[in-house]
Length: 191
Image (cartoon, rainbow, N blue to C red; front, top):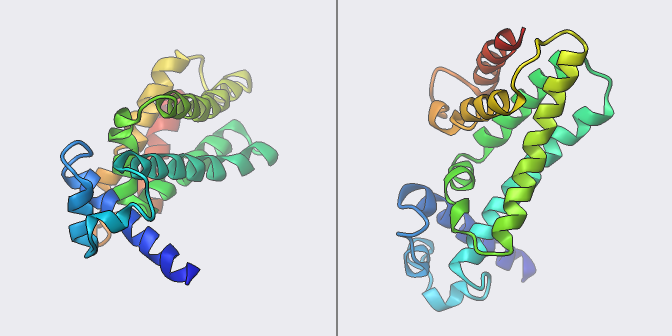
């Protein structure tokens, strides 16, 4: 019985991700989600207390995935260049595995209410700081030049977070190709 509930919950999340991506969070309703899932709107509340509850789960699940992918880099002995390449590759990989959720994560988080909005911003800043530390480490190792860390971090995330627009499942570029090309541009710009 629990497996059926989990499957339904996952189905609701996937539909919500797609609707929030295509229509936007504000223009999507629980009724829209229920219609796409094929259930009565009231039955959605067995799984999620509100539309914002869905948004919160999508955003914080994506944040957890990004953190899960960068955490191993801190424990291994890599050069700053290798860490940045791997961090870029892992970031792109998370996006490609979750195209709809990524779009929601990057654009719809603004609809979170407090205290979740502040919690989300704190997580985002903490994650961005991990990239900043890698770049700073590279400057200390003389692998990267000294740069304005805020501008560079902003530029990196602007490029990486556009991956959900670049990647097409049947397109010419796969996740590895995209991350390699982005890595080359970013790292060459830091030398």
